Each structure stands twice: as structure tokens, then as C-alpha cells.
Image (cartoon, rainbow, N blue to C red; front, side):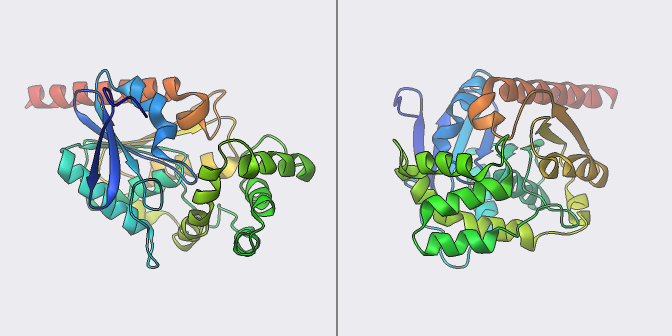
Length: 281
């Protein structure tokens, strides 16, 4: 997001917000190990119809450090501040950012809440048994080993052979442009710990009244998509869709245009339903 003529930057309560487009406001909450710029294509795909505000979450870029008392509510407070500052009433969250978005929905009524494979654990669905090893390796400075543990534990790649995962980890941690990845790795333990801490039967999410769309990709691990129909049953105003041929990184890397189209269509349908409801009155 380097085009100063297109992207506007501001600090809101200590977090940097990158803004583009015109129209009703939409806030994007990045996932674990993601920066705001990873959602550039998604934001551009929405910018013709929406003013898109992409949050640079704490501990990244020009945003403030997270501090020792981090919890998901730290990010929720930041999103609420951005909503207040911008007047936006739509939130989209990806992965861990989707978990943040759901907890925003517990505290604020929105026009629309959209999450792509939110980091939600229901009845132990998220296996965090790898977190201790990852944290120990990271603390010992063994970043390649830690990244290998992360990739194997999260099962986000279509293979599990350790030598291949090690080679990819070596590229991610020591290859071109890897400084950004190394800088973000220390944020992972706290975020995964929050997913595990919040494991439940999911009933807390019945408190989300906002019109909600839950999205997932057919090529993603089952633990990420299996919670979506359960959440859609629990939440009073939610629907879910599993999109063919997409994986966990569809919003940020592999299919941002497809996700932008899904968001646009969902929001247009919501506006039409709102107008029809007003007309019926």
C-alpha cells in the first residue's frame, strides 16, 4: 500500500489505519502473521463501492506494541475505536481477525459482520498441542524450527512431510523479504493462546445480533470450516458458505477478488433487504 494518491493513513488510538475507496465504510481485520498490506488486493476490489479501512494490528508496522496484558479484547477495543472514528458499520475479519470480528459483534451492533474462517475453537476443535513447542523454539531463537512446527501444527499447506515444511520455513524466515515474518512471529503465541482460552460450546456467540456471513474454503483444513455451520446455527442472524477451490489464504493471497465479490454481493443483498423491510412498514 505505497500509492499515496490512493491510500490514506491515520493513527487511531495507537493503531495505524490504511484507507482507500469511497462509499459506506468497511473495516478489515487481518489475521495471524498478516500485515495490512496483505489485504491490498481485497481492499481494491471493494474500493469502488466502499471506503475500506484496513487495520494494522498492534505489534506490526507503525502501530503500537501490544503490551504484556494482551487478549482478544485488545484488538476488539482497537476495532471499536476505528468504527467510532470512521463511522463504518461493517467489519470483515480473516482467520484470527475473524475471531476478533466476532467479539466486536458481541459488543457492537453492526450493519454486517463477515468472517472468513475465524479462529474459533468449539469443543476442542482447534488443536493447539503444538503451541508449547513452538514457543520454546521461538524463545530459543530457533525460528526455522518454530515455523516448521507452526506449519505442521496448523496444517495450512497441502502436505505434511517435515523436510518440505522445513525448506518452506527456511525461505519464510531467512529468504527475501523475511524480516517482516520474523518480526511478526512473536505475536503468534498470544493469539493462539487466546483461541485456546476461548474454546467453548460456542453458545457465547448467540449474543451476536448483527447480520453475519461466515465464509470458508473447500480446500482449508476441516477444523477451520467445521465450526462454521455450528456457529451459523448458534448465531440468530447468520449464514455460512463454503467456497469451492479456495483455501485459508483466499482473502489475502490466493483469491482476494473472489472474496471481494462475495462481500459486495452480501452487502448489496443486505441493503436490498433493509429497504424492503422499511417499505413493508
